[in-house]
Image (cartoon, rainbow, N blue to C red; front, side, top):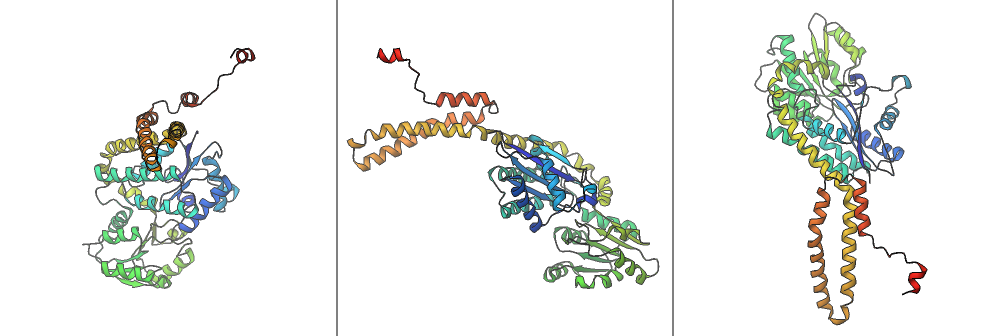
Length: 432
């Protein structure tokens, strides 16, 4: 059958932030891109993973529809309207076991910008919904997705790789403490109401700070968080006025375009006056604040890449857990690959069963006239169970055979199962 899992990864280790934010997807755009992959490349199974630090595509390549990561890169550039001169060239092409292992490492937090971060599991869960929406969810990638999640959960439940407050949101609060000295009089704004925003708010629990404002496109969600964490709510249409009155902004919306442009920030800086700094921690992908905002005096704009450097000094405990996490990933990869490679022998197993059941039915039919209908049904059930029991261990052994990838072995089994009438010469036929 010669199936292969192939992939394309644009991630924080190989792809600049300016490119990553342009290839970030939400559910509608992600679903549309998967449909494009299916229509243009013909991939029946495709899975798209889009997070703060990566955009990755996985697909199943078959003899009837060979696909590769390079073709995905071209469609990605087309879908995101890259000019020929600016097309992303910083990406990783993945194939076979390499693709499987990479996804399992991503799920386990081993490929994260902040080692062991847990948000990736929630982001990975939604990827299957996008595939279902696009009609690109199939047996193989569904199993891959399930096993990746299992690997991720095990690394967190069975190791300490996720212990301690080392999220990007935590790093944002730590950075603010370094800049302002303390948070006692710092006026804080959290823009967005998703998981990153909640983590930022949780990092403030027990801390003393000046004032908290929550802003979100959906006001009810902002109000829920404001009540939970003791803040007030303002609408996004008031963002300029809020920035005038703030010291620390943590932003993590899903907006496709910047909420604050360079010109808007220049106006804010002009109206703020004095030398009072404004720290903006932009955790959104794509970014909520235009990059040039950070060039304005007394306006400090930090992004995800900047924050990763802050937490490196605090990851020593997690690094010690990497070998244990790697062992879990290795075990889950082997488990998946055993199942995946066994798919090659499934047609052979079906032929086993079809052939033996055909013999069973033929022999049973010869007895039909010698028994009543009820007795015939009893014998039918009995012989079906008997054949299934007899074929159970041969089928299981075929799936476990270490040479499953050996096409000659599978061809040999097919040969054994094929009923052939020996060729007889004319002389043999005359002689009886």
